[in-house]
Length: 355
Image (cartoon, rainbow, N blue to C red; front, side, top):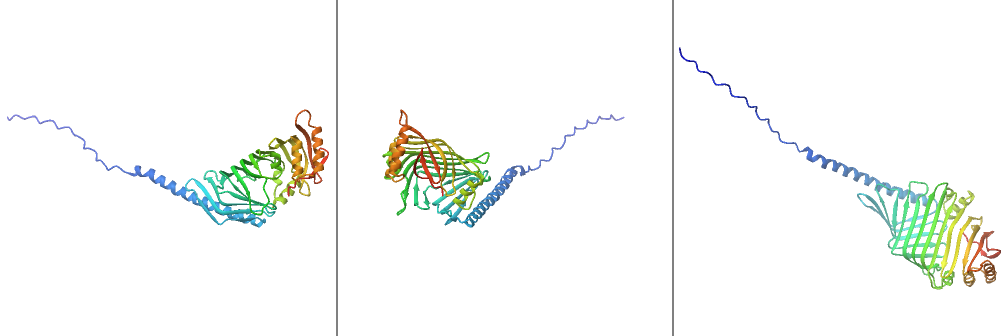
């Protein structure tokens, strides 16, 4: 019988290698696609914001023109993509009905896209303000800028700052009190309880060659500070300055003086308290407590420049001397009433005119 050979055991099965597919590249493209969508969306938002800014400016200008203001500009450009809105106006001018006006050959404004209610303005080429009676005064400086914050509220915050300023009246215009100043600041700050703070500061001012400031300063720098609080500020509305002041006064608006003063050389006029309003004749009403240093010099300069009559200056000097005490500082009340200004019991001239 033939011998039966044993069969070899079957070879182990080796699994077929998996089929390698070509890797997909979508994961590489997704970030770029998302970035592109964001850029397109942001560009559309910026274009919309630019158009909206232009429309709002036109609407505001038309509204002011309807109220009697003159608002003009020769050219307007809106740039600043992608994160800002830069508005540039050439030959911009605004004039209110009573005659005050402000003009700038180039006015630039800037706001960030995330804060379009807050704007910074600059007039690097200077500006010109015009007084209803005195005429135009050209202002130049190293820095001339302003800010408008919270435009989405009924009353925005307003600030102005200028450094190394010069003031030059136009040919034929009346002189201006200052020829130069190292720094000028103005701030308007609405607050609670229908109030607003108004602050003005002038540092190292140079008085013009003639006039009251020049006589008092005798070539030395002039400094001015004014810090006050206005009540019933929401009533300060009108198509022009006199109308707004009358509406504010009729609503019971008052100005509370917190600190004020003029330093001209050795002469100082300071006030730490007082309440003022405006009478029907447009002149100041109220009383402020003042301190006078070098009072005879100050009152003498006022008489020499025609601000007050010489006999009134002599009587007021006697009152100041009687209240001067041991030092050279006299304290007295200045009262504005019935269109007149009195220092203590002495009438020294008409009350300042607000409008």
